[in-house]
Length: 290
Image 1 (tube, rainbow, N blue to C red):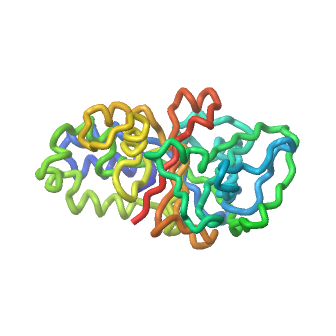
Image 2: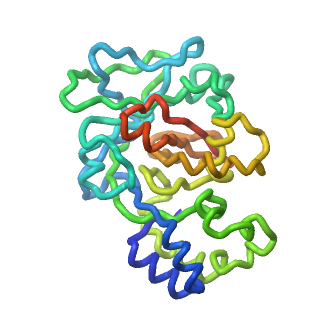
């Protein structure tokens, strides 16, 4: 989904939406950071490579299954310097993302948002600035992904077609047959969103902002897991979904030799209170693919 300057998105909404709809949609825009392949801008982190772990911290593992793959290392100070991502991230130190990607067991133990027993298969660690660290070699059975430097670009993100906030703002019409004829789904408006997207490549890595779902609202998927509900029509789902924000999403990226399922995306969501308290162990993970 589009990440673009606020002024351009406001102008697009006012040109193609009725005034009330434009105001409601603009109220849903959220700041976020795109993580793009580094060019001339300052690096904000990297995909793959080897992580710098605290001296006393072993390589993250999922007990009974094996080691996790290092997915990304992100510089919190560089993220803060890039602009507003809408999150109360630490202003220093490094965020490390790990995931049990199935390479050591032939995909026999997927990490599933709906199965609490698989939660140790996706971890987020914050290494405070000044912590003694060393570059840790990857486990022999788990080669490191190729290292791809990233830069961060700030902008405003737009909600997906079934995002909980959009459903709350526009009401029952979102779930009706009339929704596809709504001005938000009009050709000129949707084409304008595509034209505004300033993505320099085909990947959609992001910190904060609205998730870019592959198969339905990620927030609702997490809410289903938290509440232990199976029906997507449960009215409590949107209430719980609204309590979660995107921490990071890491897209399929051929430059890093990362393929999640069938051209999918990894997502980590967290509650704002847990984020503010540095409780990254409370982040929830989901993988969506085609």
